[in-house]
Amino acid sequence: MNKIQLIDTLPNVFLSRSDIMSDIWQQKVTFEKGGLYLVEANSGTGKSSLCSYIFGYRHDYQGQILFDGEDISQYAVGKWTEIRKRHIALLWQELRLFPELTAWENVQIKNKLTGFQKKKQIEEWFEMLGITDKQDAKVGRMSFGQQQRVALIRALCQPFDFLFVDEPISHLDDTNSEIMGRIMTAEAKRQGAGIIATSIGKHMELPYEQVFKL
Image 1 (cartoon, rainbow, N blue to C red):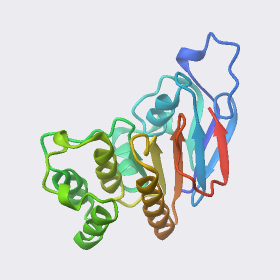
Image 2: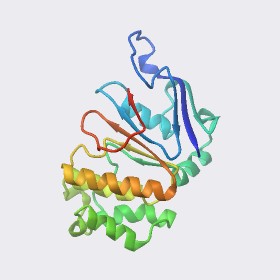
Image 3: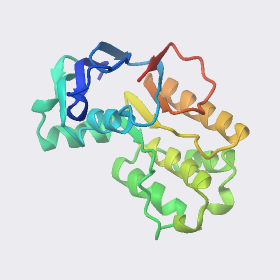
Image 4: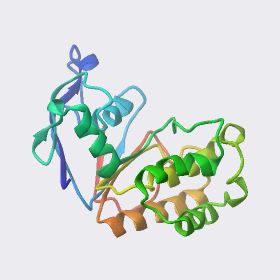
């Protein structure tokens, strides 16, 4: 996948509003593979909706969302399975980890499906992010910031053309935020992929090619 486009897209819940001022909604927006983008949002402007639309979890919008010129509203379940496995990786704001499993088990659930990352690389990321000692700890007993780091590692355990990260550093200090940014951009560069990050305030200081106001 080389291009994601939104054309006159607007959540249905906003249809009755005439005061929409956005760089995303009701605009023509293009995200290119290999690009680095930031979407800044205030609470209630549809950030979570945007993530769900692009990942195919929700379809309650007007307008179009296109992947390489194809309208995603026409995709069947099998097509979405392929896209989520090979083309778009997503780090959800709410993480969606399994609290009863260990950090390592949460990561391996995805990596066993894809067989994409080597054990050595995953262990290196755990070490870089300062959570090597948490590999065998149950996620439900970890802090949210620690969980965010686990969720990032899991998101990187697949091939992707776009990495979508929704408020990835909301509970991280500056040091870990910088490390996360380095890991993300290095892996995206290795795969020739693009990154789309969202934020409602704190965000990674990266050389964004374009910043959108949602």
